[in-house]
Image 1: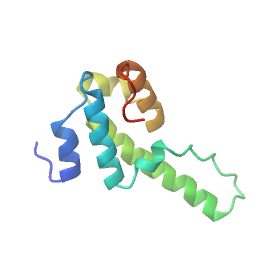
Image 2: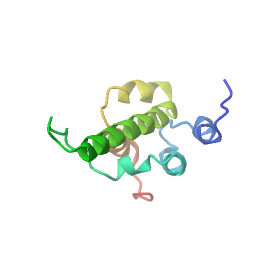
Image 3: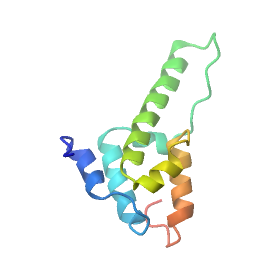
Image 4: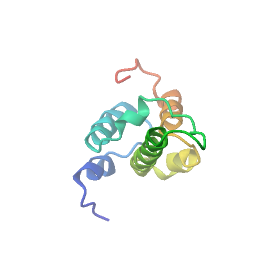
Length: 112
């Protein structure tokens, strides 16, 4: 199925299979940056706001949650089916990326 989104097309054409981890990660960073969701990989997940928390805290948490889900879709959609199945249950993009780094980032970390 052809993608109409040029950003998604970059990842579709360069799916993560393992040996291409560093090239895939470079492309992923480009796509997530252009989609304005890369920040969830570099920002800690905000704590769940209390019932009486100010609206700005609830909005910040919701924005992080929404952007994390969008980034997660880009990441999972750009993996081989086997890798996708292994990572689909992970809650955050940070956990996914840490696990992938452990699996495939044995070369000198070029893009951290």
